[in-house]
Length: 297
Image: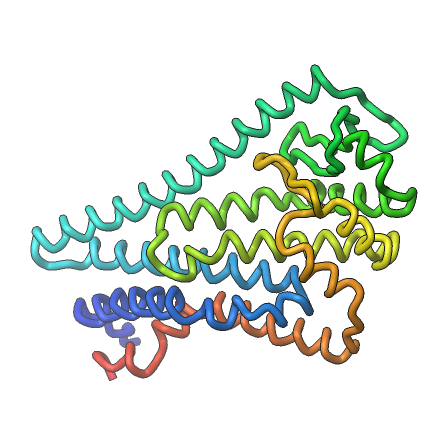
């Protein structure tokens, strides 16, 4: 039985070119679709997934292209250059993500140490209560997660609004939302000059707030969540925290109080799921496209 013909060097290098072009095209063009506010409003979790899939597939495609070029280049100089570029990409991405994660973790640790000294545990709320004239409810996510409530927030929020605000913060902690933010901001630090990476952190942060709003609304109603947002909107939580007042409070409150037909919500979810699947398959589709296959057709 005849064996399948080996893929030529030229074909493999063309695959590397296709992966590089795919990553560049997604980095420049995808934000025009992903940043559409209406899609995120309809299905924030799927929108977060689409952003993260786009980021990861672009980086993975570039790494694969570098690996192919490094392994297949004929000239020693070309192979050395490919290995250098692949190593630079790897180091840059690891540096961006690791530094972002370390800085966020260090800020949370310092803040947590201060709360242990200044705050008092409230088992009824499941939170640390801190004396403050600013109305705030926020969480410090991570392995030693904490939810923080100020005395001003206790005086400002009604009972149902407080329960809604606490449910919002618990959704952040349970969903490990800080990990998605770390990845988005870390890759933005590594590749700040391309729109996909530059915009990812801000949009993912807002979408995660919407997702936590939805979790709280399912338990305590949209009115209670919107009321808590309005009551807490005048105070900004610490930079190390995830807070109910993160992102655009006005947009989120309008989203909670507005009426969206079920068919529109389902349609937005289907569109985002399809987009996420297309992005996940993007590198493969780029490689098997007729243009990329042309060298051995």
